[in-house]
Each structure stands twice: as C-alpha cells, then as structure tokens.
Image (cartoon, rainbow, N blue to C red; front, side, top):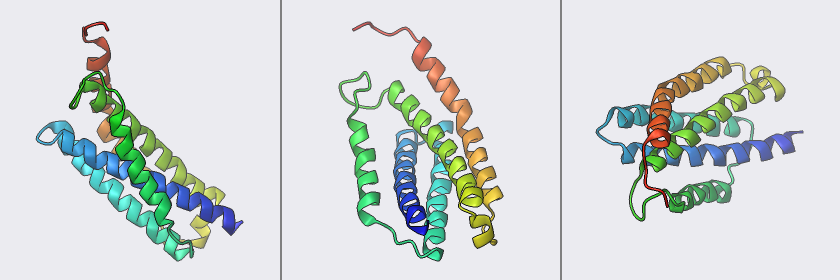
Length: 164
C-alpha cells in the first residue's frame, strides 16, 4: 500500500507546485490591486503548503520526483498560451481563469488533506501534523479568493463584448 501512497503523494506534489506557480503568476499580473494583495497572501500560503507537503513526504520516506514537479511547472507555463480573447497581453478572461483554477486547486487541496488524514491514516502515523488546521487554512484561502472570482467572472461574462 505504501507504493500506491508514494505515487499518490508524488502526483499531488506536482499539482501543488503547478498551483503555487499559477498563484505567483496571478499575483504578479494583479500587483498593486486589492486582488493582487489577496493573491500575494494566498500564493505565500500555497508555497508554505507545498513545503509542508514535502516535509510529510520526507517523513514517510517518499522521495520527490523532480521530473513530475518540473513537468507541472512547464504545464503551468504552457497553459499561458491558451487563447484569452486578446492577441497579446492579459485579459479579463485570463484573470477569471486564474482565479477559477486556483479555487479548484484549493478545493482539491482540502480533499487531499482529508484523504491523507483519514483514508491514508496519516492522522495516526503523523500525530503532530494538524490536518484539521490544514483543511481550515485551505478553506480560508478559498474564502479570500471567492469574492474576487465571483466579481471578475460576473464582469467577464456579463460585459458587452464584440462578437467574433
């Protein structure tokens, strides 16, 4: 079973690295705004969560797969090439998609902490890891971004835009 747990952990670390990179990019794209401030806070916390996750992996003797984490970073960068309604530059749709994917990632992270704590029985194996606080922290991150996601999404999808 530890073999499967190791595979799962390496995959989840790669996803976490991808979300961390996305959060950092979104923060840079929105620097100097209230959204940028919220993203800076969340990006820092996601980075801390990734390090917590690496620590858990190390304590379980699960080695990090540098290829998977590198592919996650490359995947995040390739995702920037997606059409966004503008020939060049940042668009309101880009902002919304960044927020949408970040919120999905945060929801996924909450599920991850529950899975590790309860299904993988890490609450027993690593009693000093406060999985309940990690879940609560993820919920706070989601709550911090959700008002922005809703506002940006509403602006993007209800604004009059030229038809192509």
